[in-house]
Length: 114
Ligand SMILES: CC(C)(COP(=O)(O)OP(=O)(O)OC[C@H]1O[C@@H](n2cnc3c(N)ncnc32)[C@H](O)[C@@H]1OP(=O)(O)O)[C@@H](O)C(=O)NCCC(=O)NCCS
Image (tube, rainbow, N blue to C red; front, top):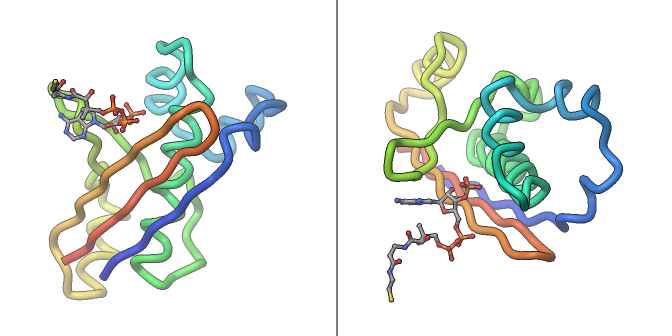
């Protein structure tokens, strides 16, 4: 199962902290805000969440339930919470891969569920 999403960075330009915390987890907010180009990071996370929903073909998922973390090398992954694990079990899948890229104008992400 595969999903992809692309978004314009400026979509996030006028978001308030309250807006961020509706969609993004505390870890994601802390990560994005630790960079100068935090909007690119938020946009990348958003794309990853959309790509995950597309891969699952399930639009009933609350975006905050999907958390993107990073390995020590910086590679992103989706946090295997009980909620995510239960969804994967339901779909008889056990592996999720995510890749994110961003520049000044756009972010893109792809998710593969196997
Ligand atoms: C990881 C790397 C490929 C990112 O590429 P980039 O063009 O700078 O930036 P992109 O916008 O395409 O990608 C950034 C995203 O890559 C992802 N990423 C970072 N490190 C990663 C890694 N080790 N593996 C997979 N993905 C990684 C992250 O999701 C990051 O976005 P985020 O931190 O907001 O989540 C690059 O920075 C890197 O480390 N390259 C190492 C090899 C190298 O420098 N070679 C030089 C050859 S001359």
